[in-house]
Amino acid sequence: MANSKSRLHLLEPSRRARRLFWHMLSIGSVTLDEPDTHLGMDKPGAHLFWVQSGEGTLHVPDKVFELRPGPRCWLVDMRKPRTYAPRPGKRLVNTGFRFRGPELEAWCEELGDSPEFVLSPGDFEALRKAFRQMLVLARRRAEDFEWRIHVLITQALGRLFKARHLLSAPPVDMPKPLARAIALVMADPARDWRVPELADAAGSSRSGLQRLFREFQKESIHEFLQRTRLDQARQLLCDERRSIKEVSAKLNFSSEFYFSRFFRKRTGMSPRQFRESIQD
Image (cartoon, rainbow, N blue to C red):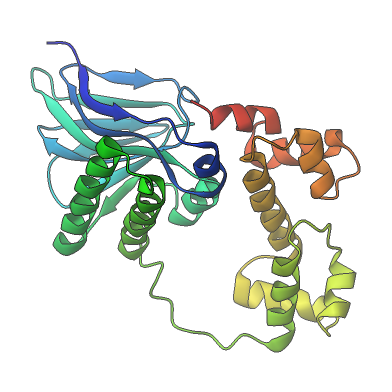
């Protein structure tokens, strides 16, 4: 038999959902009797799935993962090449959903390079329950279904954070200059902050603030500022009403050219390519 996507439901998100929410692009099950290969950048978003039945492999750049039933799932970045392959002569059924959101790239960066997540039995059952709820919402499409799907996807991603122990860090008493600097940047993330002015506003010397960032944030001030500005850029680009020139001006770049160079250097694609990648 050929591969079947007859049990896959496709959704067209509203403009508001694309701009503000985690939004569902497809949900359901895919039956594979032969390998399903994608070259990357062919679809927007990420694919969160688990194995309903059968066995196979997931091929991503430089890595191969065994696919089999059990309390584990895989989060695949759709920008990258990938192949879902059943065992020879066997059938593989994957269940899950494809989604996007303004901060997807930042979430993927925090979750790390490996797409495989081993969950506790309780978290795995909670993930499958969320899937069933989202499937009903996708079919019925009540007035508030996009918001409710947004909440359920957030909870599902929380399970992945828990699996990576990213929610269990002990509280740290952050030095006041560092806390003040971070608060200033978060209050105006689009601003083109300069390290000396930030250190002065935080009540610290440049070298002193740099030391605090490396000790507590595990990154330099410059890295923090660039990462924050990039997150803001990706979020603004998700708003289709803004032109790239307007996004550039909002982020206080001197020109669209310099904004594009900044964005390409850190993501490997131009702002226009990024915007195209988040569309169906």
